[in-house]
Image 1 (tube, one colour):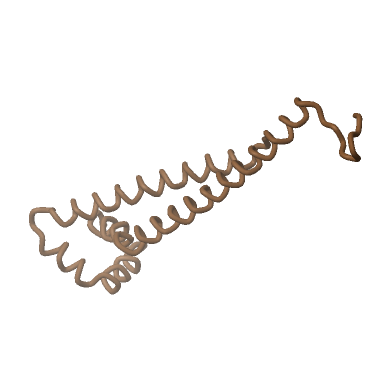
Image 2 (cartoon, helix red, strand yellow):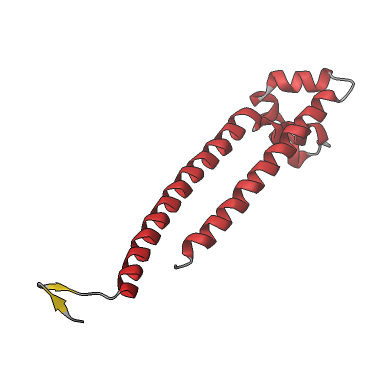
Length: 130
């Protein structure tokens, strides 16, 4: 490496390599920031699902319940925690309410499965080195 006026002289290839490294580092940081924002959004979606349709798992189990001693206490817990929903479920002769709850449950499981799959991909990608 020769020096001109006290500054190291880097060949064109070296300059391009340094510039490319800077650009790649900047892009990598942008991708990691976007990745963090997406993780936050997915966590928010998961929380919203828990808050809005989290009851569906319990009510679908309750509707499928076939009584015995082992399941009597969980049944009473569902009745206490979701008394209005249980009354609606019991009154419904068309099974519409059970179908709606099953749909909520299926949708929440699908979305949570997609969130888990996305987290696995993110973890794989973030563990790889550039």
